Image (cartoon, rainbow over all chains, first blue to last red):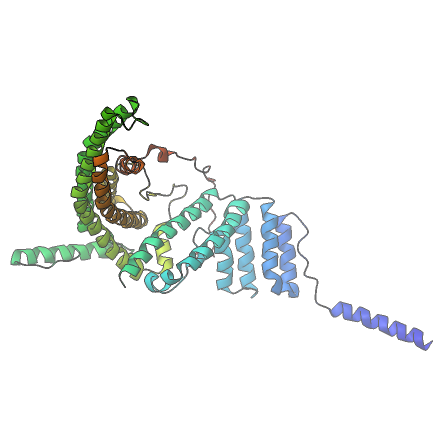
Length: 175
Length: 274
């Protein structure tokens, strides 16, 4: 009798601990972007904010399955919501949006002049730009079908590469 | 108008007027204008083109003669019959023409080197000050993008990079024309153009210096060869190289099709966009 009580108590404790364990933070199972966004919003508001990167990637993958120009707006609204809810800072929201859906390279943010700041780390900057171009390919081309935007970003990357090569050579010659 | 140092009263008045006009022009524009091509750079480019043309004209005749002599040498089946006295005479003639070519190059290259270096140094100074010291990587990017281009407009792409396989003088003439008509160009294409020309000048400058060093050696070797009447493979290689540099390499003109045109849908602008 005593052991039966103990078993019941243990089961009750186990069930209670299950209820208070952290949520599983599962990704969206649907292929519909709007439904996936709703699912992600629910999960993020339910203690899964730490998984934001993974969720963003899930949403991109879902959108790649149904690419269209309107997807840009869906992502923008989702990021604005994330910032409003305090899941992301405004700066982070901008970073997430522009890295994937804008022609401009976030990698090139900086407050110091090119001779003193960009040129000494030119290889690193170009490598980061190349990575960002990969994200733009995903956001602009594969998610939003913005071919011209992506090709302009690709061209901009080549122009920056050329202009930095010349500028940094000129900076080095003036030292 | 970048340096206005008056020497007379009239010049001083002109200077003042010009400075005032520049000030008004600058005040009228909203965005800062980058000044990569002052008149000195444009003049340097024009001069480089004309010096290159002079060198080409001088070399054209001698290279034509070399071609004819080589043709004759091959048609006479002299390849492998070097002991034949007629072939030896032909080989000596080719060698002499080759020496003429080297002589012309030796005579014209210092001028070429001088004008190329002038252009390179002026551009270097401009690039350093306008793009290197006055801009951050972000403002440089914005300059290259040129604000907000109109929807559906194809981006300007002055991707020259001096690899066009065209005559040297023609290349400089193109640069000159592009720069001289740059009042209608936007800053973004000027930055790319200036970088392109500068890097091309850097390379050309190094090549000219190296060629000048090599000419002395090649002349000496050919003078020695003259005593034996032989045609070295190196000689043919140099002539071929000079021809492709000066008169263009046709195989480099292959154009690969570009990507399909982008979607013409009305682009969405996010409030997050920077």
